[in-house]
Length: 273
Image (tube, rainbow, N blue to C red; front, side, top):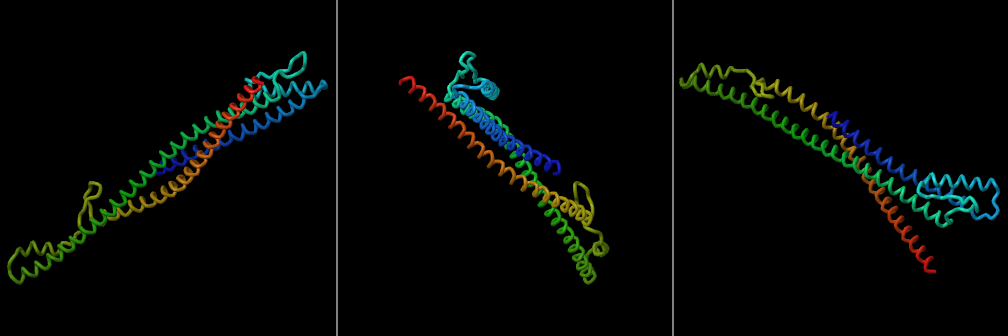
């Protein structure tokens, strides 16, 4: 049971780590998105200036480099002749927002997939632990029944001895019966003999072994049950977090789709006008 407890704890720990990674992924990309928006905002501010100093032109170049590093597919550049950007401010904003959403969605999807796999592993370990607890309980019941059988055997042995005394006394009165056999049965004070784990032994020895076994078993049950309850609670909490992250992921996808649709609609309207 110690090995099972360790496996269960390790599985739940892996699950919690995986969820923490997914949550951190959201935070990291969200922070990166804020940085990108700040960079894009400063770049727009500089791009709108008519007379830029050499320092401001150099700053623009640095900001362009930052955005291209954050978004390798952006292809943002400064015209060497005019010094202007090859994308409008609106186009830059749209690209930054959409790319950030897509990046966050992709990272969230990967992390959520990993967390979901860990959740399944943890649930399997919980199930196996639950089965082990049921097996322990079945064995405990078996031991209780075996102890009851031993008690019954002891009682029958005592009753047989008492009956032998009655029969012996009766035989003395009537002169009938095998007095020697009845006397020996009456004087037989040996313990009842039973079987335990395929071995024949006295009832007291079997009872001692069974009581030792059930004492150990109960301690193992209590310890494993405590671990099961604790880890089961953690798995439940983790499942709620995964549900929340999944909802956030769906919101990201929806927002990305809405932004893409709005961008397409604006582009079409501009062409018509």
